[in-house]
Length: 604
Image (cartoon, rainbow, N blue to C red):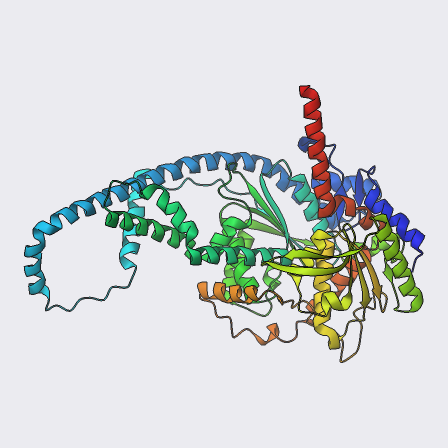
């Protein structure tokens, strides 16, 4: 335990220091790049070597090799961005020509139908005789929609001959799939690369697994909702059809053909989600896209199917993937869930990514922590002295951020909310039971992590089988606080190293089998997407509902312990101001105001 004065000085350093240009915390890095133009930003290798020279990183040959691979990828991305801009320019013209020709073909068909309607009255009597002669034949059963499907295919073939095939996209540079043990620098190196791509690639996203799965759920929900309400289809169809010079029935036929085309495009939900997932395909500026995906894993059938469908679609459309995981690709799915789908996904992944092992066995989070003030924000055990230190820390931090403590309600995905009992200008306080003893999950923890740069959690017990579900939620909570770079204060029953060593009703296992526990929508969405892909949601191997391997179990709490240790270091705490969304929004507002002021001064 440390005195409050130490805590205050470190917190002030982390939340108020503005002068330092580069900082490093071992497995995560951050730097103040506001003074650099995009062309001057260092690539991953340059940045890595600079940090080693400054003594802020210990040189590791595995990490340097990966930094070199990422540097080479970055150099290829600049040309790829130009190639993709040219490709999308050609594609836009092709799509415009194809749409114009498609509508022209529809008009020709509509005119034929209109003319056929005029001739119908003349031929009615003749047709009645023919119908009587043919009435003895039993009518063939035709599946609903077959006629529209045949018309749609015939029209598409004609368009291919009239407009030509879709322009061929330039080959994308191979991405990287980084895997290795806990604390070896996978996420740090990926983040170095992601930061260096700013100003080089137009469309870029970084996701952690939990956040990605939740966003997939949200996009699926919106797409199905639009399909049910049919508003998006109708609005796009009616604009140009209403003014056509045809009878009402012919207009209805044209509208039905248009609607069928859109329904065909929307039928496979995962490609539709993928198109919304990374970039807005309707954006004015088109170009290359990259996806940085932290901690790829396959925890259940839905994850296998969703990752396969969405990542495969993104790779097929030219997105460059840089991913991290603790496992090699073919070891991701040791329970054999939906094996055929998984193998197709792995084949696509290996086609578009180089697999790179970071083979170091050193947990650099511990290495950095050994050179820092030990457990400065982590108070244990739960005795009166430690609790008093924790309360003093809360009082001091609350005072630094205004002193007015109130309750608050924050929005959560899927139109839910979460009540926060005690908050004070970006700081929040919870009990362990409130966050982990109730049916809440990743969506709630992401909401907390995004809204609060500093989080206090009291009453953390030793984890054991008796509170297995709480332990699982706690690991997810730590993941999200870490991913969003929150400052964390803990009051716990044991040291960090002993936190997952509780023995009540047995030691922990299966900590990696996190399930989405709160989103009732999520369960429905998983069932729906499995049905769309003709995938059975039952019959999963026994491993998915029982024990995971010893290696998986060890990784789960090793990762949580490693992250908790890093979150106590001065380097990590310094980074809160630069990396947490709360301060990034403030910095963006400050830069916008400064830019506006400068422009007004120049104009005057």
